[in-house]
Amino acid sequence: MLSINFKPATVTILTDPVRQFHFDYAGRLIGHFNHGDHYRVGLDGSILFKSSNQDAEDRYLPMSDVEYWWKEWGREWEDWRKIPEAAWKIAEFDVEPFPVSEFLNRIILFLKNIGFVHQQFLKIWGRIPILPPEFYQSVIANFTVGCSYDDCTFCTFYKDRPFQIKNIETLNDHLNEISEFFGEGLSARRDIFIGEANALASPNRRFIFLMEELQDWISEMKSLHPKFRVNRIGSFLDGFTGHLKDVEEWKMIRQSGLTDIAIGIESGSEELLKGVGKPYDPEIIILMVNRIKEAGFTLQLIFLLGLGGKQFRDSHFESSVAMIGRFNLTPEDRVQLSLFNPAISTGDYPFKGDLLSMDELDLEYTRWKSALNGLEKGISARKYPTQFFIV
Ligand code: SF4
Image 1 (tube, rainbow, N blue to C red):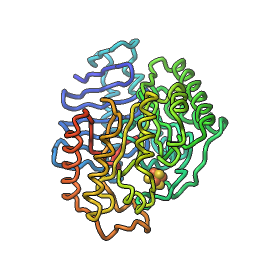
Image 2: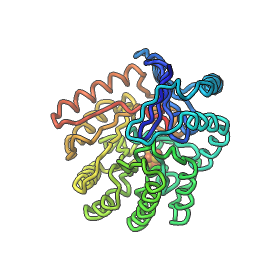
Image 3: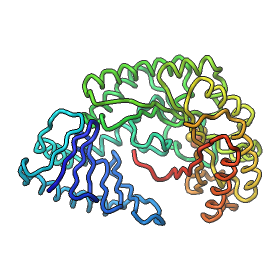
Image 4: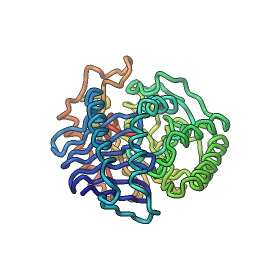
């Protein structure tokens, strides 16, 4: 017997205890578990495959496999429609009764429109090059486009778009497109991420105006979709503009509803940062981070292991650990350790001939993690594989 669980945010269909499909209320597939293998499905139709084999790396399925699975799953879902309502085992968790046949119609209709849905995704968001891990599968609301700096030699994420800050009108158009895109599926999303690379580079007044618009939109969405909740609202910050705000300004931004900030610090070595085109003064970063903490934010601090190759391996490690030791972090903050990827560096990256191998990067990860544990400040450090994520 097939089981269907109607939960406040999502619907799960179990064909047996180790094989499940998870949908949002618009009928959009979010994920599929099959005997320990996990297929995570993005809004753009991409599928991130996480194998039950712990040693296997996560990978995106190639387009031929994606098409194969959509067809296979579609056939199976059509078969479900032949099962009488009374033959389903239905469980409702804190929701009104919902006819199984209506929900199955939604998933088939969604599947029929999938090409259009993916085009809409590209029209609204385009290519999303990076997100902080805590905001995977959130609602992405872009206050800005691109990166206001865009000169780091290890990063080509936003080279295809000039930096722009949205005005109220263009933000509202964007938010309206987002509501139409998600429909009832919005309820499956619990967080909002404000993109793109550094929306917080916007002047304070403009950012707060845009936050007010976002808050109005959230209230409207909650009245339309009572199951919609927002737990956190996050954004990226760069060190070039972040240190210009004082604690009072950060508190105003916190009061506007922003809860989380992710900062690509990369390294505590001033020499290395200058060498790769991201010339921060580490003292300014420490001041900035501690001001932001004082204002009450949760932080994700991103460091890039392997940056500067073997030449900088030790000085990058030592200065970064020393810097992290001076941050006033709290248990909910995270240090995200990402691994240098030469494929996304520019032609000007100066250490192209001095790369760490994957094994050496793994050793670096172990070394950084144990040094951060050794600080005895309860710092939570994790690997941040920036190239594999699902929106
Ligand atoms: S690393 Fe960040 S600040 Fe530097 S170019 Fe890329 S997005 Fe912009």
